[in-house]
Length: 339
Length: 282
Image 1: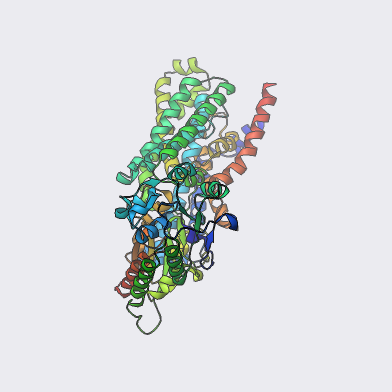
Image 2 (image 1 turned 90 degrees about the vertical axis):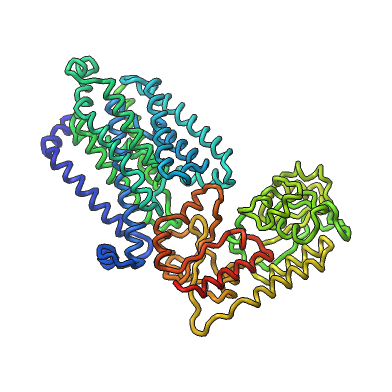
């Protein structure tokens, strides 16, 4: 931990936030510039700003920019909620994907999409994702209350994951579209390909609300590191904190999953990368992990388009390829610490 | 169900299923015909009366997928399983080359009277398939009439104006395009359009990113859509806001899949709508 302390003293928090924000925005710009078909980005940009309806401006405004911005938003949501859940459950393995919040959100989105509800009301899709996410978060809260051991959390996560998975299979079996099961296999891997502005505007408000709820718990999370009693005696309302974090995670992860599918491991990796820089302050970790999550997601999404594989690799496959070994290392380290 | 995507440049093959010896010479006019494939339904319902059809697929009754939904309402339906077919004691079973393979495999082992339809990749192949199936069900004259009607409608398409033909690209669910050597490609040509799928920045193979289709620069964008179809992610791509915006800049035609998914007389209507889109001013 001495290394962490040195880091913390070396890089002040505002500089860290500014640096990560700059990196995220730069990656956003790279993501908009990287694509399959080379085209004159400068001309497209000036056409778009001048309102000239050219095909280049159309590709920039309707395909490249929504994809880049959604990468930023989804990555931030996953990183932030990962940090919030780890702080709240005081468990390093808490992450929307591992504990089943993402798969429950996917279940909600699948039901809403294939029943035709989202065709009638487009807002129904993120609402379905949020409903699934909040159900999982509440279940998780019942099964593995704060401070519960890693085993209880992981078992709870497995239970929610497998329940959501089998209910998704049931929903697909009942779907009127005979290809539903086939295409959802790919969708569940997570991707940002060919997402558009309508999805962007749809998920932006609930995501911002979810971020605000999670970030509002920062000071209470810091206090929670002293133990529940100490936090309580410092005047923090822990029930309120729990409600805020569950609602925030449901809003952010539910809407993220409803447009990109389940992009795994970002919520696990981002907080762990940032923890040495945040010191022992889970409250500070929230914003850093969100920004790191955005950078990771954008970098992975740039990578899938630069790789020569066609059609492109699914974003969730790339994050899992990075995240799964990370998880194994993490578990090994936990075992060493427990021993 | 979208076999044309396979891009098989095969000429029409009418293949008798199973070992050759098992293929009993069909009676002159089979009376209990069963179809296991939507495209076979479409042709059979036009070739023979409903009293001779023991079952067609349930898809034939769906007006979103079928052009013969009204005719199919009078015929029992099956869901492509051998269990449903055998009790009907059919004297001719017509299946598709690429669909209901499990049922076809079982029926082949039972040496059932089976006829498999391939997926024609040209108008000549379509005509040959119609004639072949008409012979198999003992209605060669009705087959000839269907073919004559199809060919005369295709011949009656308005001739292309002199000069270069407008280029077109056919966008299908999931971002697939119709490549050269396909039936759709020939229909485009007959309608006076030039299929530019092979000149797209990323070629015409596989699911393409939308930006490759938009920046490809076709004069006419043809969206192979199934309006009112049950919700699908593949179909959702065709509702992308970028395509909506493109419709303001490029001539766009939405053509229902049922008009050109199956070989049959309905492809004449597809060609007529394509020719009309060629003539329309942007």
